[in-house]
Length: 183
Image 1 (cartoon, rainbow, N blue to C red):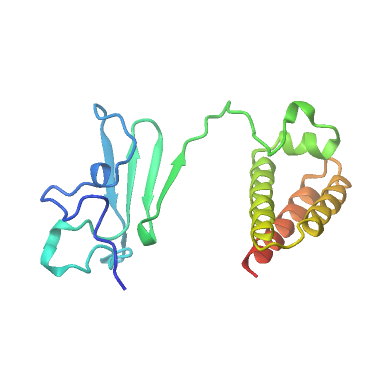
Image 2: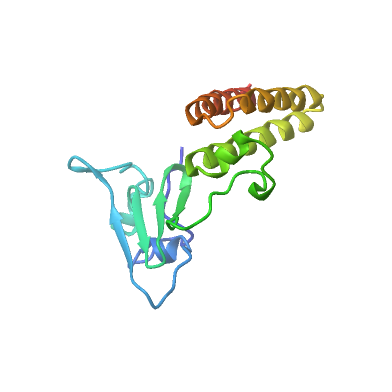
């Protein structure tokens, strides 16, 4: 199995750099802090970037994090996945999967008032859409999934503004949708 050699530049150059090699979006005039991640004395995921011994130290090895001046955090992960996290400001509105201005019941208003519940709501919506698309792509009837989602929303709405109740149902629903999309 081939492992990462590091970014888009092949072969890696002498000044290997995650910001340029991975084409990270940054302001070129502002500093970027890049850290290699270690676990004990070894690089975390130290096998990344070492499949080509002839490249020596030129390949960017292991997992790394890059902090940019615009409050972005990039994390290099397996299979050349780069996770991007953006800082959320204190005054940023919660964003549910639905228009909070049209929240029609206490449960929806509670979701809109909570960053945690809004995040779960978006995740459930994404997982539901992914499962629905997989079902359609397989030529199966998506009506069963849509009906089940509507039943679940009705059940969720019986929680009213009880955050623990809503959160509990959301966690189970998200796990259910994820498990269904794997089968």
